[in-house]
Amino acid sequence: EIVLTQSPATLSLSPGERVTLSCRASQRVDNYLAWYQQNPGQAPRLLIYDTSKRASGIPARFSGGGSGTDFTLTISTLEPEDFAVYFCQQRYDWPWTFGQGTKVEVK
Amino acid sequence: EVQLVQSGGGLVPPGGSLRLSCSVSGFKFSDYEMSWVRQAPGRGLEWISYISANGNSIYYTKSVKGRFTISRDSAENLLYLQMNNLRAEDTAIYYCARQDIGDFWGQGTLVTVSS
Image (cartoon, each protein chain N blue to C red):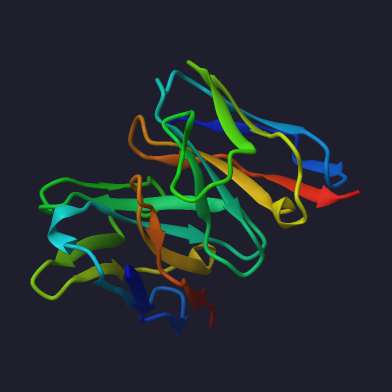
């Protein structure tokens, strides 16, 4: 099973700041890496798929990058609605797996 | 409008069984692969099962293999998750999801395994 390790567990930031979240895979996942955002009491929302492709309706301030085993999600300028939990997911091999999540909270 | 409407959650004793349903509308169900994902209270997401569009390919995460069964009825636009021999650690919100570029999720249904 491919293990995804996200860091850090929590980030305390202010609106307007730039943030980069990390997701490291225990083995190569090619580009089959997705990022989700989840707010309390809601289902996850897809932000990025195939490492760097923005899902439909996702603002340009969200961008994904990386390759091999190391991936990032960058939010260029934090908006109030971006304070949430973010998960990465690999769809390269079975079973698909999620990282443990990074919480972006208001400082 | 794409909709995934879930039903079938609830309280079940350890060792019991439950079947979750996911009623799909707004797209041609038979063309799309589907998954189940769960989230234990206060925890992260756990992908648990996948079924291909034609139902011929099925995968499970290790913790549910042999106890859970995913299936689909494309004539009725229904996705199922049959859960047997339930354990306390299966307590979670369960989501059905179409995890592709479109990416649509059900509203989630709570399964509580407790005596």
